Image 1 (cartoon, rainbow, N blue to C red):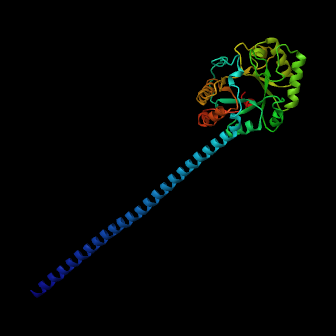
Image 2 (tube, rainbow, N blue to C red):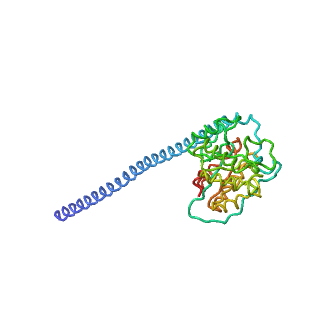
Image 3 (tube, helix red, strand yellow):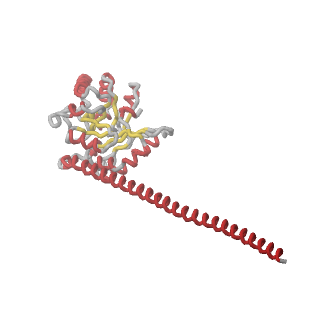
Length: 333
């Protein structure tokens, strides 16, 4: 009897031992799980905190970058305005002087061209006419985009235009030609009555002043370009000196297309005139039109002048130019 009790007690002890070990193991597992969860949670909190900190730093860096960009743009705008300040004090002849009459409500429309689709980015050349002073050049360069400067020939009022052009890697000449009606005519303006000899001598002089010139566009010239004989004489002289003619299209009656064709040369002309009216809103609208023309035809030419609203409008339109490639006139074709 005593033996059975002793065996029973021993069995109970073993069972309790197994239960104790099982409970201990369960407790250990639970402790591990709890500890793992706790440390994982804490580690997660640390990682999350780090990630939040990194994201915060990124946002802060982005805000600072945008702030610097805005400050830079504000600085450039102020610098541009400062550069132009002296120009605004002068009496600037309305850009509409290029056309038949200063009373013309709208500029002459460009010739219709075929719509051209291409996988290449459309090219837009913007010519700035009437460049004559170092201050204008500085203002044009401050815009920070590719602009083709077209210099007026030297005269008593602007003796340094050719010297200033010589410092530029690329430029054009804005050649004065006879208009139908224009009171502020430039010295040595080409006239329809000028002989071949006189026109040729004038072009030779231009070449001497501007040895790197390969492109000329007309300053005013509504009367001259609408006269076929005069244009024949001019294109003959330009062709002999390896100079290309860009028609500013100051008149719908221009004979340049016909004359260029007779010489076997490509006819190239202005598509959009940016500042026929000099308020900035109008210039911005014309910039959009120039971009539209470039997209339609693959290429386009816009002409403007170095007065404040034109240059400021161009400066503020940098985002608009993302869909086109701004190029000098020599890279258009």
